[in-house]
Length: 103
Image 1 (tube, one colour):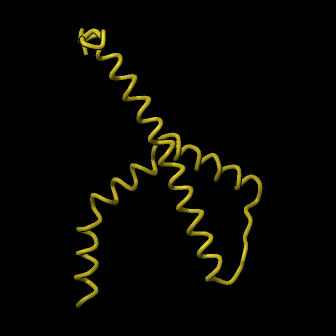
Image 2 (tube, rainbow, N blue to C red; image 1 turned 180 degrees about the vertical axis):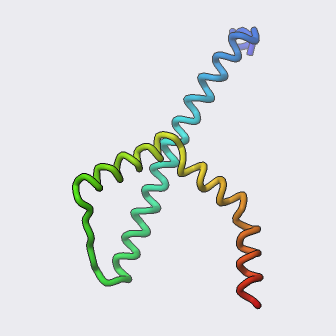
Image 3 (cartoon, rainbow, N blue to C red; image 1 turned 90 degrees about the vertical axis):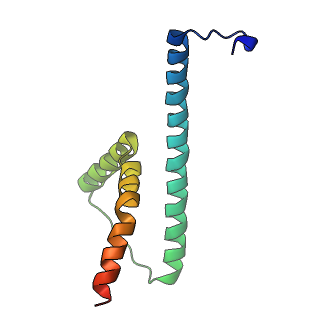
């Protein structure tokens, strides 16, 4: 770092590291949300060609509440936490379900 004219003082590095980490997490979260949106879109496209076409609509107040809830899930990272928790307990759950089904 000194070679590039950067200080290696702990207080300066800590602040820069924290900012880089925050920025990196934000950029990653945005990209991950776009990826999930693309996957959802692809699933809907494929599903719509294989099923009967039906539609449903929410009333405006319910739609507003659903949209607010979805935004909260995105903003607070609940989707990623849910996937992380599912990944942690997935194999054990799969094994338990598999053994119960084989009896």
